[in-house]
Length: 422
Image 1 (tube, helix red, strand yellow):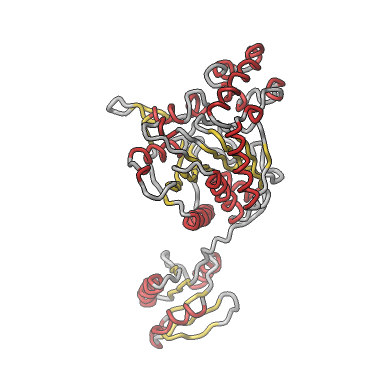
Image 2 (tube, one colour):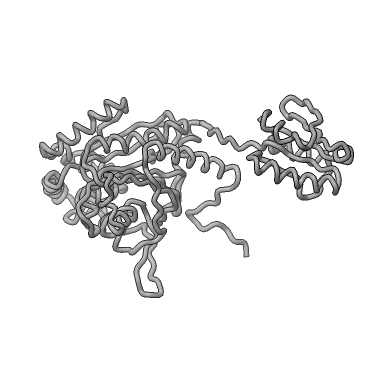
């Protein structure tokens, strides 16, 4: 039987994995600068965590979750997103008691959603995200958005835009909810069954429908910004003020509601504007979720965060024809001419590696010419040749693969010589 990778998943092979590592390096360095400490939560959680936080009427919960029953007859779900698990950990470990608030957390790891595979979207995908929990300051909203924008800029993306909206507070949502029901109810039979089911449960989700997004009712639906309370409007103006201070351009979109139920106030997406990127342009999404901590059994603590797909980031780089500085070139390839030289090559390889000099040798007993070709294929900066003469002289022949120059260097000075050249 020929086994293949499961549908909706992928193997990330050497070469491609180097791109992932580079992106992750950029992300981790920016998290250090912004002071977002890493948190690692389980890959599966109790199913109710997601139905309560993400929302029972969302596509994620209704159609996309990988849920199973374990031997203890407990319903568990492979995490479809990261916020719920992070907030659960925040509550469970009483991080609300930490003196320095907000608690600023970051995570990166695989998520799982059963959806149709397409470019940049998989059933197992890697998501990076941050959560800032414990502050209702509009300035932290701007900081979270700035971090997301910085990541894309640091990896080299230029064809991106920030889209912004406010979902307002509870009073805003209640007023808008009533207006949506009144708008859609007379013609709800024209919409899909999902929209019909959501009309009285969560009509805001209708605006996020993928099937009916072109229906005329969507274009004439009540705009949420028209229902913002004075307090919610003032909060949103503060967020925009801080973005202006940070020189971060944005577009306003009254129909941006996001796909998860826990959002309120600030909501945003970062999109690719690159030609040929595809119909689905969203790279990153996030927003404020005040009230989620209390929904999960903790004290009320305001929060905001975002999540981005590493796969779609790499796809955007490809669309813009941008390359990452991988910095993974081989420093030294050691060629051994005979068995005695092979022993010395193994010794030198170990010595070089302890000094952080990337080193490779031949393990399939190829001739010198074949070993030289291997060094060239791997873009080695230097080749060290060891044979009977070199062992007798206790000096290696070192060839600079860029200039073609070669010289003899005694064994005891090899490390110093290579460090000076590299």
